[in-house]
Image 1: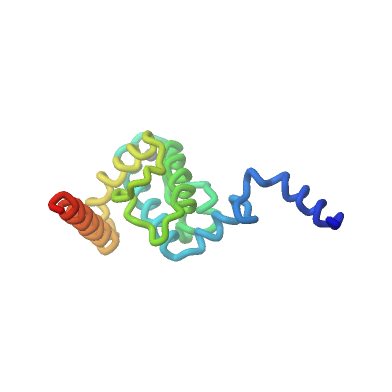
Image 2: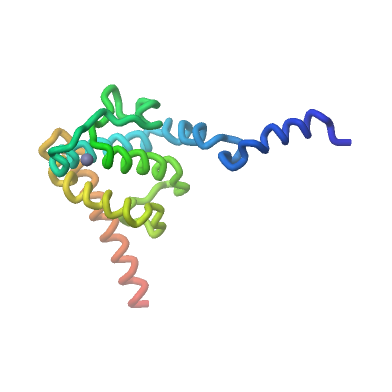
Length: 169
Ligand SMILES: [Zn+2]
């Protein structure tokens, strides 16, 4: 016999199934992923990169501190990145992508074969990286910027070495 409570429970749960996975709401899952130090670090770096990009490329625009689920969780530290509306959209999108990345360990986004970004957002983020990656070295992100650059290069060398090996087999 099915207990009445179990049925009630499943019905109550049913209302939010489109927003849930493994019994967690998207918000809960987001918060859970963002409690990971690596995810916070990656997201904070993107925030800094976007703020730097926005100041340089979107000079005439109105800017305000990012309002986002990540900012609410304190992912960016005490001060959220100050960006225009377009860059805020990109950052909110990037937060969600980062939090929902199912890969563990997460590969470098630029090396990943899964293109989880929409093409338009991918292009925008690539632009941000190209602009801010090298410049971040002059803006207090020397270690992060260089580390990211080197790790990215190492990953792409490893990838092409693996391809060469495959071809010569
Ligand atoms: Zn901007």
